[in-house]
Image (cartoon, rainbow over all chains, first blue to last red; front, side):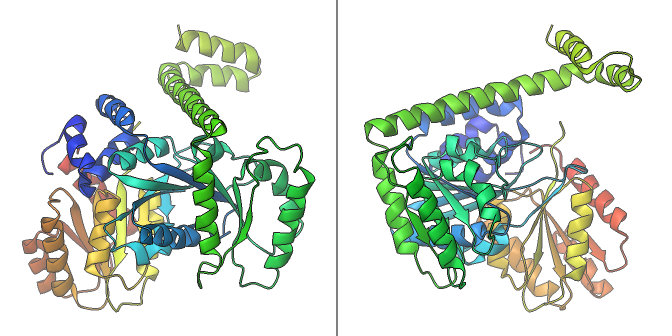
Length: 319
Length: 135
């Protein structure tokens, strides 16, 4: 691929499962160039077969390691598995160290597994702007399962649940009282709760905490047809993974029910909103770049207030 | 918005020294690049397959074990087998001058030895990507 190949010309090759073309299309989606948009439009229409699993949890909870172990299990069942692993960009330089892949090295030689590292580049919510485009491209390339690994999240990054078919929330043992703090945001989004590092002696405590917490809301939850399971795993010795795969498959089956249809619709609604927001931000940022420093100086000198000046900036940029 | 340069930094074979490559990783991150580090003891097959999956602009291989004339021919062969010809390949580490000449003849774009200042690495990589043009 030495000459510039147009994005639309890469589609048939990606559809045939050619890794370099899949990888290049993801790069073009990440770059957000207008050249790639017609291609992404075509890809979206063709995609829609893959089961999308979102894996989220606090930093260091073992997400990457368990994604590797899970991918190997799913691969053994037959289908191709794609992984999009998101890591944070530096707020200062914009650069990033993408370190998830290093925990997945045993998968590197399987041609049925594709791993892509992605930097957030300022995007909030745990995913990068192009993460869902990458999912579509892998879907087109015949990957039956696509796993999104979010950045290590805090309490509030729940977008993954609005974008994936099955959301797995990972908790690590030993976080003690801190688990209480996560519960409000994260407990609600989990389709499956996972406790990692179950070889540790305090893992049972975390399992119990989660199970108890779930029973408190058992009669008032938003999805009464699905009982959220709590699964303990140890990524190093494989303990618990059969149970995890079983839970994922069971949850996948619920997607063909009436509530599953609702979920697909709400995923589409989120995607629409998010894409519109991104387009708006892009347009606004470009159009306001010239005027912003002047208004910032006025704001800094208290010659004007944030609301008035921001309204001025908005009016000028979106005129 | 200009696109961050994507780099895979790799250590190949029985070479346990990665302080240098970590310093380079940090330098490139601070220069605004997306850096993927392979970890230690990778095979050329693993490195090439990761570089293709990640669609990096630059594959940088750090070698302090003297096996550059074995590793790089393998890397070029594997890339050719996959039909990838637009990846920029650079080498870093400690090696004799005559090996540097041979690597460049082989198609390695740049060899940066142990005394290369960090900002010179950033400049070189940025220049190589600019020279290559859009992809």
